[in-house]
Image (cartoon, rainbow, N blue to C red; front, side, top):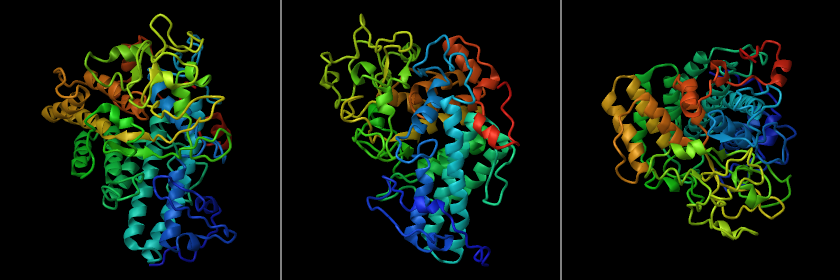
Length: 518
């Protein structure tokens, strides 16, 4: 049935999509310089152009938050990374504690980076996904593209849209659910339960369409990504038995598993490693000029000690409380955060190799490195995002790096399996998954610990600190305010577990209402 074949739309968005290159997907640039008459028939008329359109959906996760070409991606750094880590107070922005929006639970709807960067970027991605999905289904039905490839691409885009909605709900709570190009762009918010129900529907379909792995295109979403998104949605809906089934299905992957050495997870030479389930890809670009492309990121420069870089230190500044939370013998500590007087654990990095540095530690116990700002910097520094020895700092040569951002990985999925099983009454299964994560952290056998929700919250904290998913699972647990009180002695209001909708979006859409309390 030729449902929409007569509805040929010129889609200007694809003039950009065809110029997009996803580093993980191909070394070949697909460039169409004649895009004046680009239509859906042209874009979805061949395997090559359909692939390029889907690449444009991936590219939304690499764009600058405002979509400006030629800017380094700060949306992942100041948006997703800060949301995942600063909300729980283990990593803070370079802010005075007296006025910190995080310590005071008071993000500004008009200027807070989490609020203002995540919403527009994810709805841009959803808009692209909706266009591509509608046209892919038509192209497959009409055999304009290879059926097997078309179905796989549909699965990829479904999961990418799921990921955008997952993060939107975890950040803002209720959000508008827009699934077609015909829907009102000025919709009011839908309940978060409805959004997660849709994620279950989409991820379930995608599971049947996606492969476990790719021979060369390692950055694409896989069946493991779909199962992880599906399990998370079931968790949010309180469907714990179904979540157990989804997370256990990951065992069917022929390539997925825990890295033997925790330090190897984020190693520069280990992109898309066996533990990675969904990872954002970057171009390694040492060009000092600011305007070159939007496929580079600035997280390492922001996370490195300012005493080395001469600037930055804006995010990824871990707390002493996080450092002290690790048990003796837990190898995750040195792979996550290093204290004054400690060496960097990566064999590629000797701290005294940087210009002007004559010690091989991050300062000393007597004189911690705080970049001259002890009131805003702890003297403790992140490791997971500081793994590229080529990045030097402001006023030097190399600012941007190609280290991937792992948004989902197997260690986190195993802890989610443990939580789902615990809440479903499957205690032995919960303990087994919990022990697998802890045993790896000790490089063998960890000290015995009974799995409880309090223990799981701490394990999430230590396993995922400095990554891109921690606050989502903390809020999902229903015990986020308790988590903040237990670790920092601060009373987090329930309504501050989510962020305010950006003021710019409220101005643009009269049907949106601000989240309660903002």
